[in-house]
Length: 300
Ligand SMILES: NC(=O)c1ccc[n+]([C@@H]2O[C@H](COP(=O)([O-])OP(=O)(O)OC[C@H]3O[C@@H](n4cnc5c(N)ncnc54)[C@H](OP(=O)(O)O)[C@@H]3O)[C@@H](O)[C@H]2O)c1
Image (tube, rainbow, N blue to C red):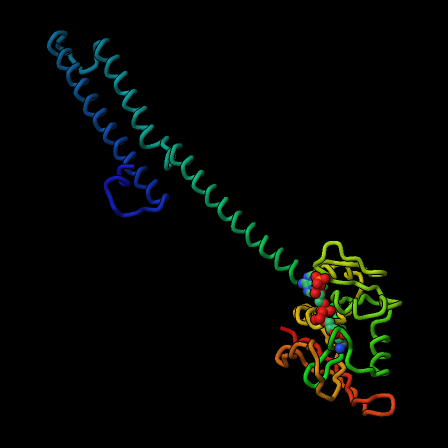
């Protein structure tokens, strides 16, 4: 702790513990050296006393009982101290070992936490990829007929009658979910037969005969999740929102400009690629030339 207070240099915990340990060792050795000096002094003092009061002609330093016992006792204490400081003291001491263990445990815990975080992230990425794959397999399709000027309808009605386009629509959507805005639903005489009609409305109490009412496009797609090709059939408001979710557009391009109040959104050719087209001239049953065009979303 001394180093922490005096120095402005920031030390990492491992360095700090090494320095504290070094200080501890210096103190231990100092204590041993003091012990050595005291022992030497006491033995010398005992010898002097022995010499002064119990002198004999055949004197040898430890020939008397009390000085021998005292010197042996002091010697054993010194030896124990020596062994403790220099031999039995396991390299860094118990306290240091515990401290190191705690330090390593902390490091391990941080690593485990990091691994857990990266695993969580990976799991999220996997789930997102899975969802994306499922979504792509779903093939959410927008189906629409629009004039050259993107006209869709006027006064909540279609502007043209093209029987082949109607057949095309029926063939494609048969047996599937058809998702539509409330206004489009109301523009039709009744729910489309042989299809699951899904109507989107913000009105809480809206009731649509033979149709499922939902409160958002997302809810409509969730409702149609078992369908491998749900169709979004309009109108303008719903098409604009659906472009982000759709994988495919089946567009009947009617080759004329029309007066309208509802329009198909502009198709961004950096996002959508034309993959198929079939042209139809105008004839007795068709007042306008038209083309069936399929667009697929370009993979991001
Ligand atoms: N040419 C074609 O292929 C084609 C196809 C379909 C339709 N149309 C024409 O398009 C016209 C209708 O289109 P439109 O744009 O006026 O209306 P729409 O898209 O059919 O329906 C709009 C309504 O859908 C509901 N809605 C829209 N977004 C919503 C959301 N995020 N959450 C909850 N509810 C939402 C709202 O209903 P509430 O007001 O009840 O909340 C909104 O008023 C008609 O003229 C129709 O004939 C043309």
